[in-house]
Length: 105
Image 1 (tube, rainbow, N blue to C red):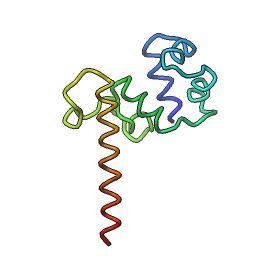
Image 2: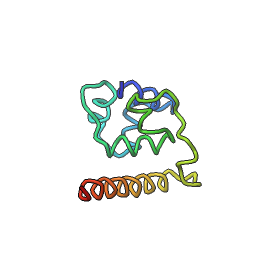
Image 3: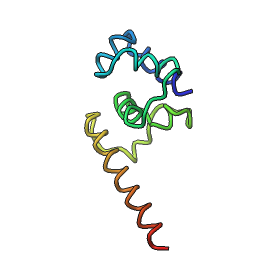
Image 4: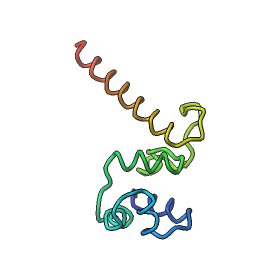
């Protein structure tokens, strides 16, 4: 499922897989493996890819059908770099909350 969403979104740009891999700054063979399902992308790629297209990671993972994230949970910025930084902060806060939840018991 991941590979089909990755391919679908890349095709929406009109770019070839090779050109898109160059744009992302990764090797074509690595990207092509993600798109064909012969290689599993890591979480860092999925987060960056979702931010690039303005979709949720759940959409890429096939956990939801809607492409667009709920705007109530995103920062008020069109800059995908800001979105990526926001996701990193959210991940740190979530991890911190999980650690404190388990250490309190």
